[in-house]
Image 1 (cartoon, rainbow, N blue to C red):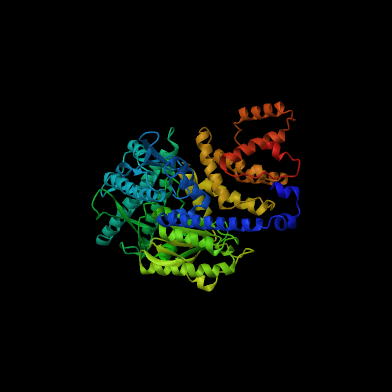
Image 2: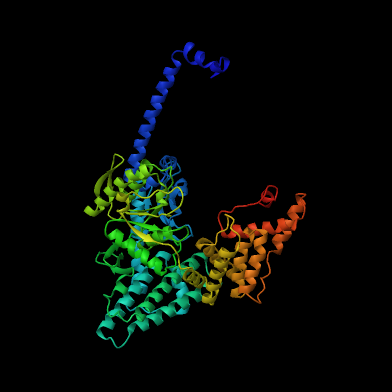
Length: 628
């Protein structure tokens, strides 16, 4: 470098004075290529043993391999390969020089702990081997927890716990166990009632089951509002309310349909039914899930407490199409505009069946090699892949992908552990693999799927979600008593805002916006128990929308509010301490006490509490950076 710096003429520097220089560079380049090739082969050998490594970048995987004997650095990558695990708890043993670790507990992102009991995993071998053992150990631990809860609380003829004991029962059980066992219990109850109905049509045993489920949801709603309840327990109860309310609605629908006379009626068979199958020895519960002709084994992938989707008739129809597609060894393709719940429905079905769902956002940069790697990981791990905005991929890439997906689906048809070739790699295909694509039709820059690819997927139209049902059940799960009227008002004001306010690109009054208002209302209700429910909703809607409105829209928005909530004043802001602190801070920084800036800082604070990402929009010199 020093020599070239002295005489920076390219021709003299590289050719005349130093004839071997280019030759040396060429040799170094060949060595680098050989090293990279060997490194790639090493990474591929690791991925072949533990296929979930396909979902990590080469850099992340190298970091894991480099620190294989210490679980602590691996914790920052563990969420990328397990849906419900955020941290591995390892117990050290041995001397400082010769230390080994045993993983004894798994922790979810919400802080729930799953003990591995007798199946603690030792970290004294290759990382891909002990992670494979960890997966098996996680599944076995879940089966044992299921058996323990099922045999004590759910097995036939167990009574509903007393109100005083219900909170304790929820607190001791794991969220995933509670929800799935609730679905098993519901399947048992309705199945028995329908069998009785067939033998004695005069008495309607379903009405008894409906009363039981009404009582259950009321008890859960009371529990969610209890003071002192922990964050994890509240998450469990919210998910239980969503599931049990849907169960009650299904019973109502069956009672209302006079054509339902037995357990073989279509209205019952179309539901997702959970049936315990305990032929195996040992205290482990094996679960089967049925819907119409489709049968699935429960996947035992730990889900944590990551919430459940409100189930509307549209969700039910989507589930039916997707499970039917999987039964026919095909893929599923929900289609519709943004914010209608396409990806969330696939994820929620995966949660119900306890499979690992990998979400891949597609773009025109994706090629068949990158997608081939994801397919190789999905097929060998027996996971589900959901490819968002699939029709953004370029047409010539789609035609190659069509052959890859066709080969995978043909293997699934032939049975478990069949082999196919993807990008010159021989991969084993698990029969549990699921491939789903979601599409926003009709947007610019979207390809039409080639016919040979479209024929591999079963389409589901998801155009208009049922806002009212979603708002009602979400408010119910947050402990609101006056849920019907408030849900109507929330949905109405969002429809009016969509129609009457101006149309800047940053306005959004769709499903995501409504959902964030409903979640914010739950938080405000707990923080300010002195407010009545209508005031809580008013505060949530105003907190979530006022910061983003243009000046002329604020007047319109206020008028809409007066129409919908007459005689009700906006609750006072309880952030006097924060306001004083902001004013003191402005004075300390020698800035003017601008009232609008103070308001905007407080609004940004409120936005940060509800949303992970925030945008500050406005003209140059309007104070965006100062506010931040």
